[in-house]
Image (cartoon, rainbow, N blue to C red; front, top):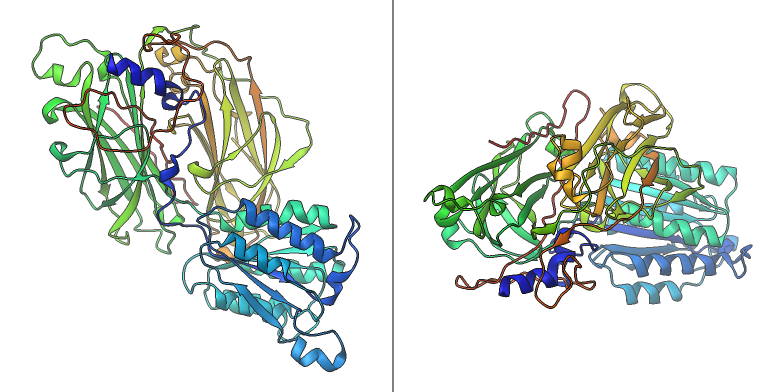
Length: 618
């Protein structure tokens, strides 16, 4: 009875019928957002009137405030400004061309301090863009990916140093600083200068003709500049064996894993239920693609540590591309009836099971430990499985709606919602993974393609591998495609109309076709897009604009009838199922622990080196 009660409360969140949220206590413990400096033009020209009303400075302040309000709490964002300390007369030029101030350092974002600093800016002086870029670069950490977002309404009026030369100098020094520029109502000469800054460092240039446009594009560009995979979860420490494995409750977890040392986690699974488990490791970007092979294993053990002969394997050949490698397991042992066989029964029926994750294959250049992101789910048994399986994939019809700009997230945890069918645009940096998610109800399916648009330049220096993957609610990869991008327009998939799911039905899992059986849960479906680094100099090539054509088909229909607690409506998940934080369970406690595993995604490749995803069950 206690087991049934927990099922009745947690079903919706556990099986993805409602959006799955990271518990409040599961904020990233080690942010991997790229530290970013906003550089804001406060020269005298910003006092000019904006077509939308007020001054250009008023519009810029509003745009910065909007970004600050929506920036992730773990992001590292600083602010510098030029043109506030002098007037714009010839006598003041020498001082004005040194007039660059760092108002806030690129530390973990202090939203009130940033907002106050922006409110107090008064424009008046010159436009020393080159000096401002050097100052902003000096205010960032000395290692790792970093970004600068520059907003300017005109040309540098203090050259030398020429802003584009400064960008070239920083790039030649090997700094991993990507500069993004926004031209606020600029002329052709200013646009060319700002574009050069962005192109030289592998960043983006964006036009903002007026204040309203700036308010839309600054948060989007700045969020993209921060985009890195950020592992998240409630802290947990896996056991060295099943005897000391922590019992986990629904939700997402974050552990630390070392080389070739399995980590054990205990999950209580009720009779007739299906368990989902996954682990994700995000590898840091590096420069050694040849010896960067890493692999992960997951296994399942039953009562008294009995090996249940369930084994999954995932491998990444080029982990230094910043791969997020995921291994997943779907365990159906609790749906099998015990038959009196002493050893076999230890892996059948309801009870406590143990899942292990192992960093089994280790690259020579791998760090000694990495964060391990986990999620666990248990889907209750059903009393009515609902409509028959749908064997056909959803049809694809290219949308003809207006293009909607979006900014994809840097991980599953912050994937950007695509609100139904349409055409969505984004810009993907070389070496970056970008995540989106689409909500599918029972009876609905999706089909999509990614169009990689044209960028300047051709030849080997511009070549990289473009990939996309589709994941189901427990983040198992269900479809993927890749192509070699040369700067010319291309699309994925290459030989089909789209990547697609069938209409989502519980009984799809009964199908012998994997493309059907792996799409048997309603909830969030994830789309990942990846651009591999350019073959030679990733900083010398342009980021890639993309358009994602999404079709959502089918009509929502009733799903299966799940087992539920007395006093509740069978098959109706609690509409406001609470998020469950991780906490240890007593060994003699029969409470059933539910949750859903967050899988990462299998690695993707570049040029000859291809990311291999291998999953097999013995």
